[in-house]
Image (tube, rainbow over all chains, first blue to last red; front, side, top):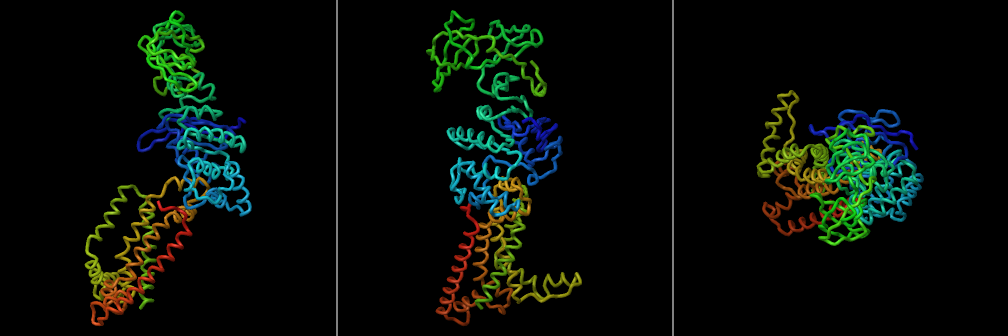
Length: 357
Length: 220
């Protein structure tokens, strides 16, 4: 599971004097499902394109199996890509689209037939082989694109926001499908998305990027529960982020109240960001809590109610199965485990640091 | 005469295609600025009247014309090109080249770059990407270019009159003579016109049929 397959070393990318990637260091293990997650313009697609061979890093190196491949063109790499807008060949039918790579590799007709058949079955499109790709729905085109890439048995499959153009329900289905396909074919997936839920659902490892820098890399659980800074916390799910002061270990003030927390290792009296997940906050009566606020709005969200509660000048976002009444005074209850203390995010300086807690 | 008309039109179309495709391919990969400069250069001669341009070629190709003076200067010696089929074909190519170039260029400009990347990703080098992706996808442009050059070439009479010196009599000339010339006979003229139109229609039909088999794309 943990043999290293790809390594990016100090990769820098500039386009027309604009720096898109600032020293990316990343390694990817064999059979890993890695997701590059970040807002648009963070450099995640550029990173993917460097791995695919469509871009050369301005400086830095990329290694496959320990061999430097900076100058290897895409058609010589054991990597296949599922493009954002599928990039299916409109002049070929489904069968010929999937067979494209095999024909280039000069496989025999019978070999092509059996492998295309297997790929079609894998993505659930058996009997669609004679269809024109232009007549298919987005979801079906998506599947053809996956089959076309996978049929070549690459070591790595790159996926560039492949589900971006699909509707919500289809997206959920394809998330499950992709995970199944990855387990079934047993190859490395590198997945680019801006959808944090998608990243958390499918990945073994998530790399959160911003401004050409990897802010944090870890398992989905780690990244959700222990975000390294306020940006990651805010990007991965919704958060309440408040300025606070760390007095000493396990002792913090925010929202005008002094709290016990579980974090340590900060400088005494240092300014920090305090992150609290909306679902960790419990609504209690005003007598039972040091934070008292007034309910500004309540929205029904299906599984829970989303309420905004104004307390001491800050608007708290709260997810709860209880629905308070608008205008009601309520108390907010927190346990020490709900409070996550982070260094003030002052740019990218700390992004590469190890465990800074 | 029928044969000469169609043969010359065929040559002119083929030469136009051979010249236009590489140019269109190279230009389509340039930056938008370079492309618009190219477009202007292509369009400017077209603002001059068709007849004037053909007269200009006449004086260029004359036995003591610009071309021969240049060739003598280079020590190659004179060629007599005016009043031959070659001169007529050259006139056709010159006049109708933009009609071949523009549709091909348009198709190549609109070609989705990610298709080229996908092809490369799937193991195809530059040549194979061209043969398997770029060329098949540009066929609609090639077809409309071929149509737009072939049809006027087959029926032209000005070019053959001026550059062919009346020696290469084309269908267009024949028809013109029946209506305006000495051999005034509108009945024969009409008959030849209809026959020519039918042949052209059949040619177009066959070509489009052939084109449909090659490309399955719904024109983009």
